[in-house]
Length: 114
Length: 111
Image 1 (cartoon, one colour):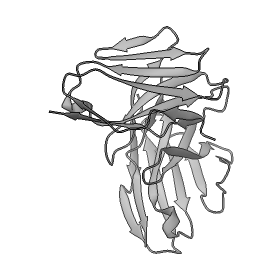
Image 2: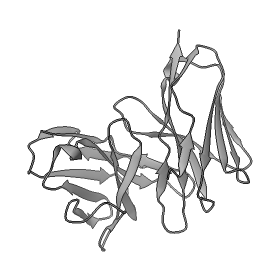
Image 3: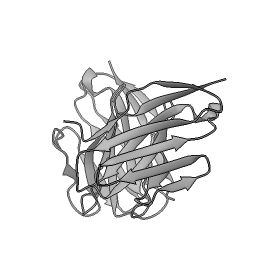
């Protein structure tokens, strides 16, 4: 299965600033997925990042707030822009291991906005 | 409207006990199903995929009933190391690849 390196693992940020989270995969993958897990909640998909095209955002998430880059088949970034305390959450990237074989997740970025 | 519903937790069981988790899904177009395990402050990790014929991996058995839109996970001979939150997950496939996560059920195995 793919190995994902995600960083930073955690950060404490001031409101109004932006944070960029990076995910590096050890193999080429067509799609990468970005999730958010708020305290005590399950995972919610933010967007799907395809190489060479615009990311596809889920309802409730917009590109201006969560811009995504996907410059190649092994790397993606998610930026959390103009942060507020409500953005405090764990952000995770994910890739598909193979059809019907599930998905692998990065180790997550624990973001606290003060 | 929750698409994947799980047993409310937490489950506190003694070592060696058998514990069962249940899950229902509302999207009949869901094609693939998984159980993930999430330890505190860690990322989810795939425990096992769930097939219509049922599948077993050591002490873990997963079952899928498509007619009832019901998924289960059975853990036999519980170990302390089984303590975690178990997430029921469905995938719509068909080009969407969106995973829908249940809220999870917390299991604590007690000595």
